[in-house]
Each structure stands twice: as C-alpha cells, then as structure tokens.
Image (cartoon, rainbow, N blue to C red; front, side, top):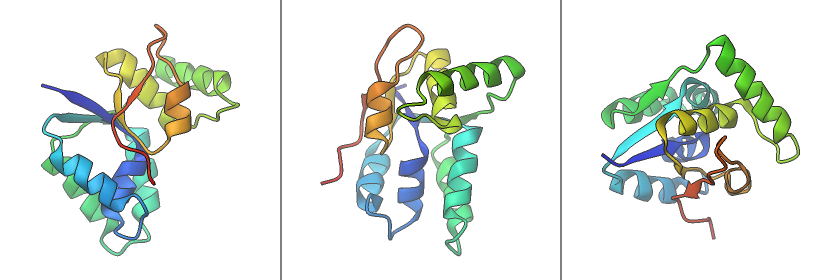
Length: 141
C-alpha cells in the first residue's frame, strides 16, 4: 500500500475552511487512497492550531481516524536526542520538533513522499542516507 507522510499544514488546512490551502488539502487528501503516516508531535501541533475552531479538534480526530492514519509516538530518549540533533543541523532553515520527528519517521518507514505546505523546509531536509523528500502537494498559487 502506498504511503505518505503528513505534516501539520495540510491537517490544519483540511479542517479550517478559511485557510488559504483548504481546497488544495481537501482535494489531495480526499483523492489519496493509501495510508497516511504522521507523528504525535505533528498531531499535537495541529490540535493546538485548530483549537480556535469550534469543532476543530473533533474534525481533526475524525479525519485521522477515518483514514486510518498511523501516528507514531517517537518520544523515546534516543529519538528525542536524534530530533534535537536534526533541529540543530537545520537551525538555519529552520526545523521545528514536529518536522524533525517526520524526518525520523521517514527514515524508519523508508518513505519520502510527504504532504506538506512547508516547501522550503522539506525541499532542504534529507534523511540520514541523504534521500530528499518528494513533495506531493502542488504549491499554492
């Protein structure tokens, strides 16, 4: 089964009809027939960002559950150290903790296709083997 990593931006845009990327996220994610993979850090960040919407958190949870999105915790001490090292390496980009956990998840799963609105970051980041990410969402016009 085909898999995509999913970042915070498309999750928030999917839930928030007022987001400039809403229709882009809805079209791409509703068409995708594979498995989505993300991290607890991404879900935490998305939950915070949609909490201002009356039904935001519930809609986000429903989306994640309906599609069977796999959510990896990635909170073990060695993983936290690896995430901190990535954040230091890419501090000029910059890289936040959620992005670092997605890079680590990409390495673990062997996936590099990612649904993200962070074109700059994920065009720069590489896995530990030097593999680039393939951005699956079109850019906003």
